[in-house]
Amino acid sequence: MNINIFLKIVSLSLMFFRIIVTLIDFAIDLVLALVWIKVRKAVNKWKFRLRVSKYLDKNAVEELTEIYSKHLDEMFSLKTIKRLLDFRYKFWGR
Image (cartoon, rainbow, N blue to C red; front, side):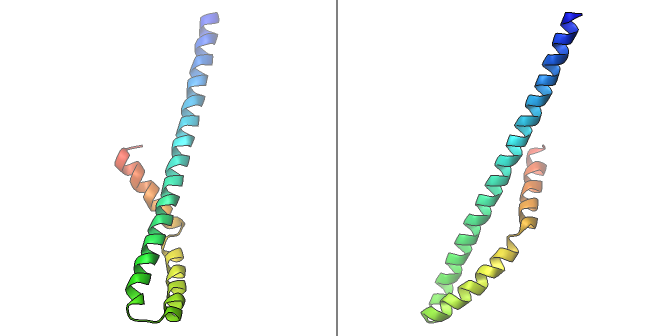
């Protein structure tokens, strides 16, 4: 009788541990996706600035960079995070 209770407690503990590990794994994936988006936005903004600065003066570059930055915010939205996480789970089979 005592062994059954012990096995149930161990089983529940392992299930709880697995849930915690899965949540931590998901949180890490979400943070990595957010970092990736921030880096891509910064790189795209820098490359845009570099391309435009060849042809325009400093004030025009600043204005166009602000407009492009708003475009990047729309482009890298929550849908992008969802697509990144979907790809990750399809690729690694979670």
